[in-house]
Amino acid sequence: METRISSLQQYLGRPFKLLDDSNSRWLLILFCTVFSTVFILFYDPLNVSGISKETTLARLFSYHGLSFWGALVLIFTQFVLRPRFQLDTFLVWQYLLWVMLEIFLLSVCFFLIYRALEEPLLSEFIAVFRMTALLAIVPYAIACLLIAVVRMPQKNQVEPVVPEPANALLSIKDENGKPMLSIAQADILLLKSENNYTAIFFRQEEKVEKKLIRSSLKNILQQLPSAHFLRIHRSYSINVNNLSAVDRKNGELQVKVKQLPDLSLKVSETYKADILRLMDN
Image 1 (cartoon, rainbow, N blue to C red):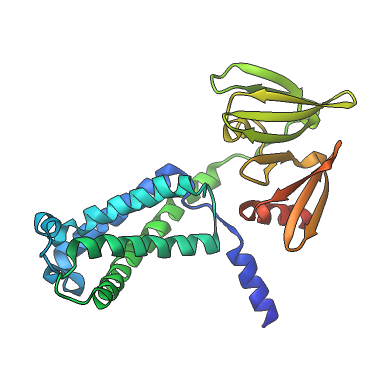
Image 2: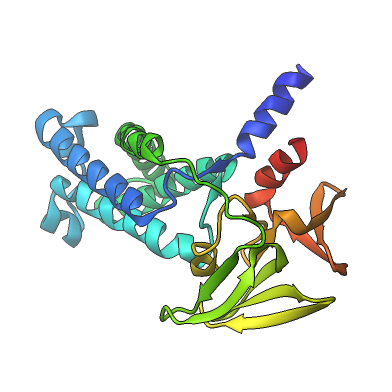
């Protein structure tokens, strides 16, 4: 029993990257919108054609507007709320909660537009929530499956990455593509996001130097070999070859980097699984 619980906890703590890129999110929204529109028009599930049209918006859009309002809510959650909460990558348990939040917001939207004005609020909202969950979960699940299938060939076609030699010079460019720093990969210690800049900490002879480059941490990491640079936090990435210690305290992971003995960096929940896999290896 404990083994099953532990396995479940590990699974729920894994990163869920299926909807990380904007193309996948737009595909999710487009598929759900088209699927719901066709399904409602041809099958009238749960007798949605009989929903209330007492409000002005409900009379304007009729029940065919369900898909339109649903698309607006998904655009809001995926492209406004996610950046607001800095959820670049979900953990599995975070994603499950996020889906519940989206269904709840869809229900609130449909309730405000299509509610029957004479019905008790609570019972009417429960009915709307139940209808929304039943209508939304099928296209949502199919869309995720479709995205996973679409992305599978892309993974298979990627050629193996040959790691750069540790002493090879890397040219790091700013947001305008201008080279700002040429440095050996082995000398980079860590990278830190600082507003519109990225601070690169590197060793030069026996000292640790810091270089500010006007570019996001994400853009800088795209210029570096991914096999050697690991994101541990929204604001930090480390060179795994210069990792000196990984410490677990009170359920939290902290890492230390060579030549920076007084600096302990906390690993966020989003990236904890990557560090644990590194420890296992």
